[in-house]
Structure formats: C-alpha cells, structure tokens
Length: 307
Image (cartoon, rainbow, N blue to C red; front, side, top):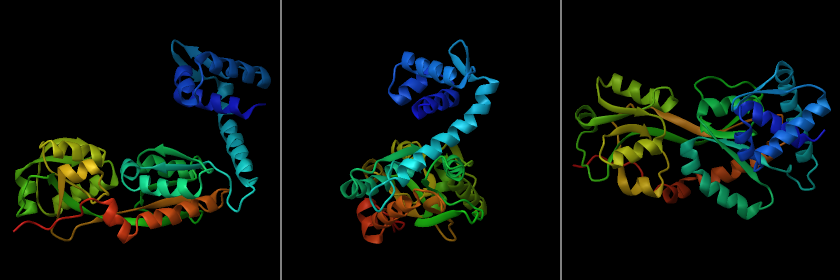
C-alpha cells in the first residue's frame, strides 16, 4: 500500500473535493481519482461517494480515515527517526498565526534556511484555537500562537517569545493627546471578540467605561491595521511586530494602565520524534525575538502620547 495514496484519500475526505485535493498535491483530478480507485481495490471496499461536485467518505471510509491518519503520522515519524544527522529529518510541520506569519516568522525562517537548507518546514496558517488543537492531536509538530488562558497538560511544552501589551492604533497622521478620549470619540474598528486579543481589548474598554463607536469588527491584526491606515477608524490591538506597510501607515500609542497583554510563544508535545527539531526552531525564534532583533523587526514601537 502506497502511503501517498492514503494521504490523497485523507485530503479528499477533509476537503470534500477531488479537485481541491488535486490542487493541494499538485496533481490532476484524474490522478487523484486513480489513486482513490487503486486504494479502494487494495483495501477491498468503497471509501468515498460522489454527490455532484462533493465527495464524502462512506461508512467504511470514515472508519479507515482515522487509521489512515495514524499510519501517515507513523510513517512520517519513521522517516524522521532515520535521519543520519544529530537532528531528526524534516519536514517540521509548523503552525503559525497570521501575525506570526507576517511579523516574526520571516526572520526566523531566513536564519533557518541559512543553517539547515536541507530541513524543510511545512507551514500551516490558522487561528490560535485551531492550531492549539492541531498540535495536541499530533497533526502539527509545533505552533507559534497566543498562550491559552488555561493550564497545559504535562505532555505539552511551552516557550514564551514575546509579551504584547495592548496599544491604541491610529492612522500615522493622527495626533493623540488623550488615548481614552480618542477611543471614545473616533470611529472604532473592533478586534474580533472570539479571539484572545479581542476579548482583552473589549474587557479593557469596559473597565475604562468607554463605549466605542464600532464601525467594523473583524479578525486579523494586519487586516485591521490596513483599515486604520485608510482612515476608517482607530483600534486597540496587541503590540505586534509590524510589517513595513504597517510601520509607514499607522502609529501605536501607549494606553493608560493597567493594560493587559497577550503572550506569544511556541507550543509542542514533548514525546514526539521531531521534538529536538522543534527545540532547535525555538532557539532560532528566541534569537529573532531578542530585544536587539525586535528593534530591527519592529519599524516602530509604542509611541508616548504627544504633548
């Protein structure tokens, strides 16, 4: 049985589409359909059923799906363990939140490629909630995300990279004398309250007895920064590492204390084949997020209120 065919089946089952699975694997839909047919003949049962353009696992397919995922993980671990170097073989399967993708990760990956050009990293973007679950299920080796507000099991490891206080974010041209008055008077772009940073911002405004004039509510710090840059409102966001675009077009202002902060770091499971690879990635991430590197990474840090 070819493990690649199992990977194709899992993708089809997860995506519900042969065409989508083909795009993910760089194959033609005909090749994906052929892989499924060969796998079904090998197993001796129908694994998927088609309804229009949608493909769903059969009852047998659902039973096979979990075992197929387990086999794929075992084969991946076997290949990593067979490395001829001091580190397990890759690829390292890494999750990252959108702000990590655009902020700190490029600097880490640049260092990684220079030192380990032959160890690939597979990167899966996602929200903290989704990535946390993917790591705990063993689908990802590690993830750069926001620390969850609950205690981790002993099987999990955590390394803090950054503490990000909440800041007021305005268009670069705006001058602020009183951040709280600005928040009360300007149109407000609310950070999605379903994510940790958004709940922190909402709680902060409530404690300060501010009822903002909400114009939009959405997830994605960089997306919010773009709207702020266009003059569509102000926002309260974690003090994230800004891209060049953000640094030129928006400005950060310190908020009156007490202001909460979110913790960004790396989560992984201790007892896994690629744990040593994760720890090496953490070492690189630590260097990229050191105080001297942050100065270069963040084109503009929090600014004090103008007087």
